[in-house]
Image 1: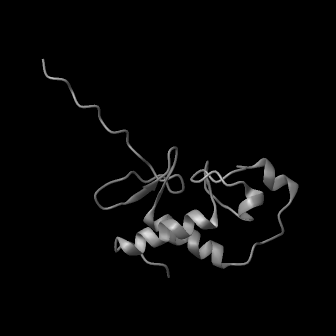
Image 2: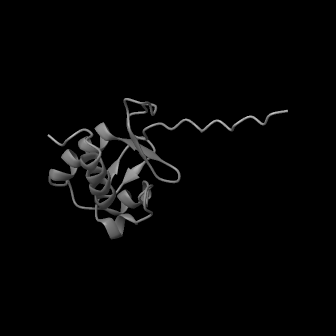
Length: 107
């Protein structure tokens, strides 16, 4: 009997929930993914000044970048999705990949 190939698990953007497809590129970490469109939105958010200084209550949210593991204290700022947090370094890395692959560009 022929062995069945294991189906690759479906990946979804941790910000918008869209599924990966031929038209929607996702950048993946071990546990999370972000689509090219959300990378652009994160870039826009990070260009704005923070709404308020970092407070202790912020540390009770997601405490580390779900892509690289940096802590909020190390990164200084995160962009949060429903169950995901991404640091500026990972946003920049994904944006560079986006540009190299001819994906969505920042506004």
